[in-house]
Every structure is written in C-alpha cells, then in structure tokens.
Length: 109
Image (cartoon, rainbow, N blue to C red; front, side, top):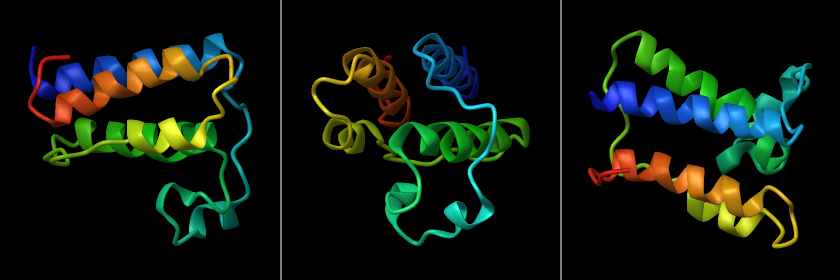
C-alpha cells in the first residue's frame, strides 16, 4: 500500500469516527470562519470542525491530484491540548490522529 493509499484510508477512518460520535456536521460553517489566520482556525472553528472542513478536504485534494504530501506533519499534539479530557471521543480520536501523524513521520501506522 502506498503512502497515499494509507493516508486516504486513515482519513476515512477519522471521518467514520466523527460520524459514529455524531460530530460530523451537515452544514459548513460560515465562510468567514475559514478566513482565520490562527493555526487550526482555533479562533473560529471547533477542533472537530477543523478536521471535517479543513484537514480532511485539503488532504483529499492533495491525494486526488497526486500531489506531494506534507512532511513532518502532526495534528495529534493540538488535539491532546484542545479536547477536554472528559470528551467521550477524545481517546479514540487521539489514537486515529496519531496513526495519521505516523504516516507523515515515516513510521508504520
């Protein structure tokens, strides 16, 4: 399996987890929310919104276009800080995000 295939599969796993925990939204945030200059749009989007509306679509665009993928990419450290310890999806989401991160670190997922 290529890195592109592995990343695509992991993005699908993250989406499935968001849906399973009823965190997937049917309506996109207002366009102004995407104009943030903050990392992860932390001033305008909730952490799970950023996953759904920014990370997943942008990664799929890179994959579909056959473009090079980012190097030394990691999102799980942000989610370790951003998600409250009591959030019911926190632990399982961190596992899936760490798997995604490992695909960009050259480690086996």
